[in-house]
Length: 242
Image 1: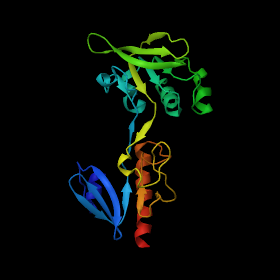
Image 2: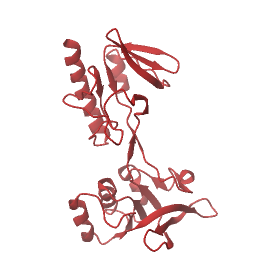
Image 3: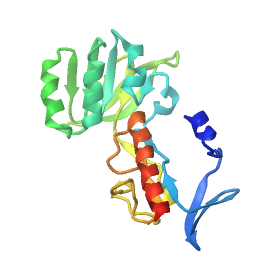
Image 4: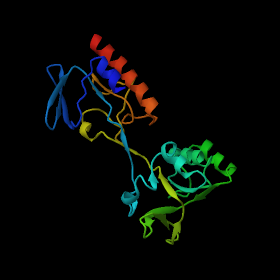
C-alpha cells in the first residue's frame, strides 16, 4: 500500500507527532513537534489502541502469553487452554472463534451477565469446551519462577474470595481507546472519544475527514479501515471540487 501511494505522488513522513490543527486563510495548519504542514483538507486516521487491564504481570507477559487478537495469535494455542477476559461482543465473538481449535476456553466476565448481543450469548451453551466465570474481577496475572504465565488471579465481586484460573494464555477484550487526544476540541466526538462522522467520512469541521478505528462505528478490521480510507478520499475529492 505504501509503495502504491508513493507511485501516485504521496509524501510519507514518519516520526511526526501532531500537536495541533487549525484553519488559517483556507488552509489547515497541521503542527507537529518539529514541523508545520499545510493542506486544504485533512484526514484523521490515527486508529485505536487496545485497552489494558493495568494489573500486575500484564506488561511482563504482553506478546508472550497475553494477547489482544484471537485471529492473529489464536493458532499458537491449538489443543491448549485459554482465558478470554471481557463480556462484550468482541470477547464472545473471539471466544467462540477460539473454541473451534483450542482444548478449552474460559471466559471471565466481571459482571453478572454478558453485555454482548444475544446471538453470541445463545451460542455459548452449544459449545462443550467453553466455560464461563461471572462476577470475577481480574486482579493479577501470576508468573512462575521461569517467567511464564501461571494463571489469572481473580476476585469474586460478591463474596470477595480470590482464586486462580489456570490456562496456557490470555486474550483480553475490554475495549478500544481511540488515538484522538490531539484532536480533542477540534472535531465532534462521542462520549468515548471516537470521532463522529456522516456521509463520506465527514467530521463536524468542513474539510476534515476521519477514517479507520478512531471513528465512531468502526469495525476495527484492516479491510474495513482501508475501505473507509477510500470513502474519505471520495469525500475529500468532493470537498476540493466545491
